[in-house]
Image (cartoon, rainbow, N blue to C red; front, side):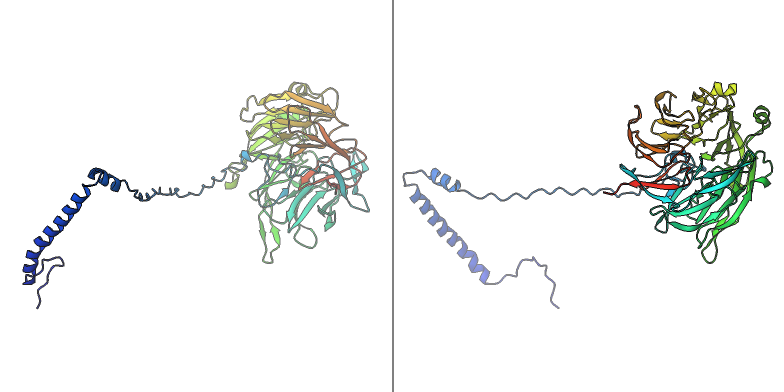
Length: 535
């Protein structure tokens, strides 16, 4: 077996290597002699040897191209997903002021658009407005009702009425209760009827509410004593359930429903002219065929009054405004001037709400309470009884419910004569509160200080609630006009943008604004849509 040799091992000796060892010195000697002779010959020229080598050395030699230094590309740290904020633990996040009522259904779903009653719709507002359609085309929305023991004919939309506008099945719907005693379902773009009207037994002067959770349901009360839950996913509207206000224990005044219901977490909140605050568990679902169903039950009803109030103002203590909710508290007021808050914290675990706020403003409150992002309440108070309390408190009031002992922050007075004060619901806009009064004043009030920044008169009384969308204030008056003002600069009197006549008499209902459409009812018996004039 051959032995292994390392790759670089010395070779084995043999005879040829010896002769090469002797020849090498001779070759090197001859080569050195030749080089020496060559150098000697060069030194015999006129230029020195040193210069010869200098010339040789100075021959340009290309420098090697430097290799560029490549900086390493920084690698960004991995992007971490932004964590979703924790859901608000209470009923209504105060930061939702001015925002739409959730994202499930797009539109104006209840009076003043949200639980804090501070969402007014979406633009753009028409720059050159024109009436696009009237509803109905060949008749009037008129009905007969009893007033002071006499029958009277009322037409159009009432003073607390604001149409609902919402998107459903790629159609923009508008739904409203009218003084003909019916609930109407109309295409907001065309004015065409979508469903046959649902007829009740008396007029409807309040606002309807559309289900905010996507169930095809409409909630509406009327002057025939009934609060209804209505399905709109059939060929015709169907009443799934109703509550007779006269059957609620503790009812005191009358049986109308003027306020717009508020639906949160499958609960319905509403005050009635029966003087009661109601909470209803809806129990909504879909049946096997995909149709909506509901099995509501009245789980709580509390008087909106107490003995102290009754002893002071009498039995007219109805609730005509809509319930507003912020945080864990539901707020409302009544015709006796009592502003209340009810703690809802334990409702979801089966415990009854508890009253946690009480303040008497001295006179009738029909306007809906408005709540800002800090939890302050803005209350419009009528001046019709002439009580000394009204002269003390004022008719436009800011309250701090966290300071139960002394909640009055500021007040503005509108009591030059009887009747005066505020019927319309105020509107929040940036740093001001916009108020329309029965004495025809349109006022911009500093929300912090209560100082009046600007005011002017329109044709009054002003019962229609102001609406602000895209820095445009819309205010209807009693001359039959809808007026538009620029409120971009809240410190100055707003310049007029336009006015358009939409009625022949007092406009009481509040306009609804959605996607460039303004829908409003008049007392002539019509509902109209105002849009941009075609070019």
